[in-house]
Amino acid sequence: MTAQPARLERSGPETVPVLEVPPFKPSLVKAVFRDVTSMHVSRSAAWAAASVTRTVLTGIIDGARRAAVEEDRKKLVPGDLLSAIDRNVELEVGEKWYDHSPTFRGLTGDLYDAEGVLVSPRQRRGPRKPSAVVGAHRFEAGVRKLLRSQGVTAVPAMVRDLDGIASVFLTDLARDAAMVVREGGVKRFGTVTLGTSSEPAPPPFLEDSVRALSVRRGDGRTIGRDDILAATTIRLFGGDLRQRALTEAREATQDTPAD
Image (cartoon, rainbow, N blue to C red):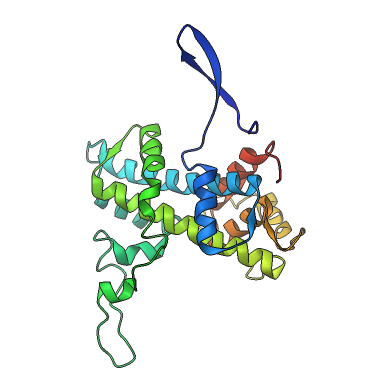
């Protein structure tokens, strides 16, 4: 694949170009998509989904890093994750992971069945079968790469939470993209702007760009790049994180072959 920019890496006496590989490899993205849909996933779609996931996890890690810096720590702990989400509601993604993580236990509220009986965390998780949660460990290498890029490390429990959030988010993104293909576009359209009255309004081009994704073009058997972008507008409800995710995904795929 020649789409991604090359960087120079020394190998023996010579310096050779090496392709820049995203922390969440397209092959991993396609494996996750295969868990939820039989549709073909184009190369540009795989790169876009990898880019969006990277943007989301980078935002979460950056928020947690800021919380850790306030306590003069470089190693992230689960409490930093909670602080990041508490300060920026945009980072509250991968919600299905919360019932599986001790970090979030007790923060999602108690669940009762139709007879008023408290549902235990184990019951809420459902039967053990191949899923985003079971396969969360697949994201560990990418998570650690992102942590290094931010100049931090994390305790194992924090790495596990980031693994789970990445896995659940990408799985949800795959489901949304498949829905966009089936329904011929984004039927659940909307935008939410976060901020204060003193902050400038978001640029109008972002809203126009999002609306342009509401109508789909292409066959009904292949998930393409624009389907990932449309799914991103569903999964990320608005604000700076969605804007960055869309922009970076477009930049990551501008030279990527469509098939």
